[in-house]
Amino acid sequence: MKLLTEEIKTKLPKLRTQDSKDSKDIKIIVKFFDPVGSWTWYAYEGEEQEGGDWLFFGLVRGFEVELGYFSLRELETCKEGVRGIKALPIERDMHFGYEHTLEEVTNQRR
Image (cartoon, rainbow, N blue to C red):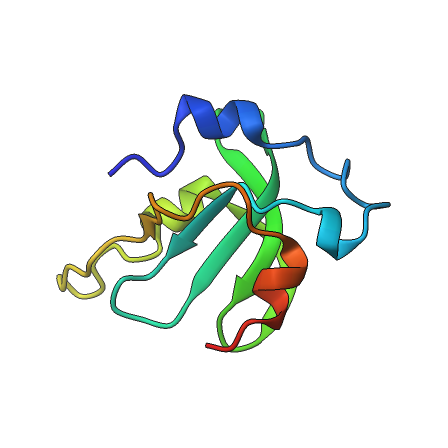
């Protein structure tokens, strides 16, 4: 599965352009998740970096719930085999849509 499509690239606001907005007005553009774990990444900003990687900013639900940066390369490689064990890769929620807000995903229960 392709994690970042051309449609998503065009919808993602550039990094640091949402700083002055209220969380109820910030739209989540893409949701990534670990299909066998509890980690979820909700990106609402992103930009292509030098070298072709993409840097995102958004809400991360992992050990904690926090705002932060994460990269496409990290998502693509974080589940690569350790000691030869192959794990299921991070996926994109293709049914998530663009109507969800930062406030909504911040306040949801696991």
